[in-house]
Image 1 (tube, rainbow, N blue to C red):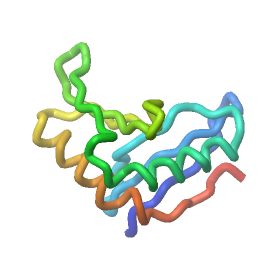
Image 2: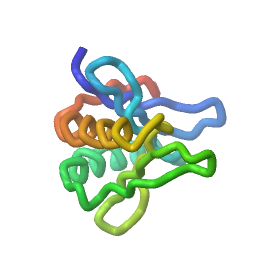
Image 3: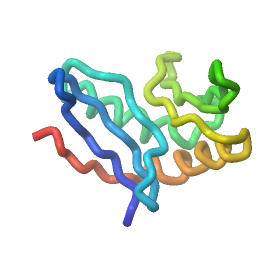
Image 4: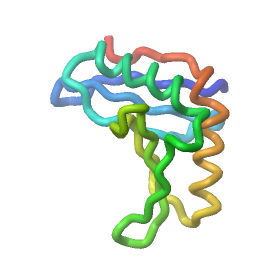
Length: 111
């Protein structure tokens, strides 16, 4: 399986996307968007910013679990990772977004 963005519509009518790695695991999840076009713009922003290490913020959750966010050039968060078991695993997630984000296709499931 190739890496892909899954564009979805939530039960409350808002749109979001997940970036899936080649193994099918979700490596990045977006915020909720009011409009589908805004979610598509978010995907394009991930593609544009994914390769830039300076766009990643490496964080620790309240429970001590490492995670990361990916930010656009304006500083707005465009995606957040899952919680990881270690900093090494989190950094592997970042590497996966860097490798897969720029070229991932869009699977539009929000039809």
